[in-house]
Image (cartoon, rainbow, N blue to C red; front, side, top):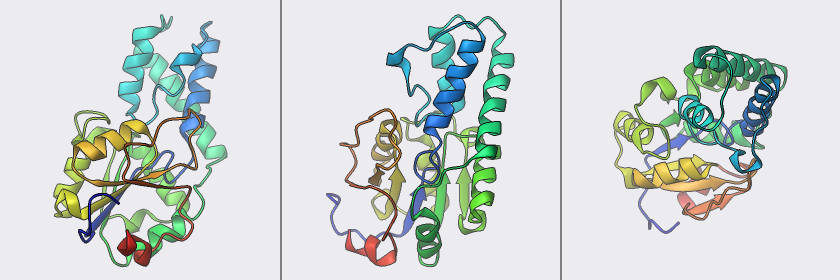
Length: 220
């Protein structure tokens, strides 16, 4: 960890791709919806919502595709498909529940996600870890999507820690960029990376959360 030996005082988790493996699900439902509207997603646009809020992803989608229904209707359809898919199957990053429980005993935990609070609480309740997070920030809670640092800045303010004392687990290039812009120490989680995003901007990386506990954090 290039940020030196600063003692960690707080930990922030991303959700999608970091706690639950849902980036591929989001991609699939977007592709399915576009096909239902007679459109095909260009391969170069895969992962357009990865690490971002749904609103930011929809901005990109509507800029690049002539969706033949009103935006509000299209957003409702895509989100309904996504919620149905994650209700059927919610894939969990290996070791993350155990890691959250271990870290929560020592550090205040926050979550900063581009998902809406409804999706966040659904996932955390499914994993039975919601109460372990002292602060939860979804897309409704900060103005600019990752890679802007807004969500992370709100989280460190709420945690009452300095940026250099806060560790972030992230999976997307946008999320890593946002965390770095906020001055945080960033660990990339590489297990769920369906679009081959670069994690080179992170301070360090892990495949998954197996073995991540308080002593692991202290050794960084």
